[in-house]
Length: 334
Image (cartoon, rainbow, N blue to C red; front, side, top):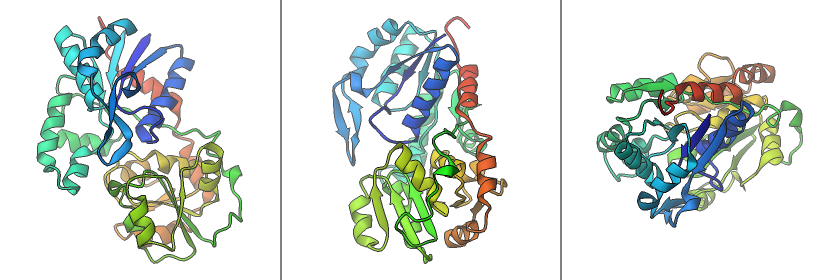
């Protein structure tokens, strides 16, 4: 069938939502489906305050109806709760079109941490956004439980995958110019990623950070001994994953954490806090260490066999993600 994705997160943004959409779309097309997308690049936009690379659509509410009709899709999936997603939701409700939504980002925790709004207020707004959805797709059981406790309904599972052809332990190089052991973190360099908790740890060897974002300059000044490598793509990023000794994931607010799967597929064990995301991805797999003492987790992960990480990552693939996604959709007339 033809599937329409309506999203505020799209290329050239670099984040887990965009990676999920692009990888899953390829798999959907391999399965014979057609995929169309309505995204910020189709509208007049302004930069999101504090995140200039994220563009916010200005005129979506007036233009999105004809776009959705022109797409002629059998199923509509609203990916995000931003201006484009809000406009699509409004149109679908007005036209009586069924749609599904997804919960990708823990905005209530992010906004509360920055003192923009209490989490209870933001959760109320999000609950209202998702309430008419035929299915709210969530990445892990922990997130589903947390949302259910907040009054969200129609929650449905939607897992994630990893490209094991790209993230390959064979890319490992013993000498990449940094003293070992190498502790690596990959992702947006932003306050909600809690990178300071990683960088302030007393660890041997080297700390590497891959990624860009609004907190980069401040963290560089605060932690001059760390190595900030900026943005890396494809083979270069995969080589760093494979060449690291431990992948440190300090976030306490991610809903999943695709970067953990990429590290595991590369043979690199994960150290993280025992919170939603790491609990579901790592759990009792033996492919990582979860501890409220992140230093203890990072040092303990050094003893994990790399083969165990690769074997565990093989349980995740984008084909499964795509098939599960299709099963949760609500096609017109169904």
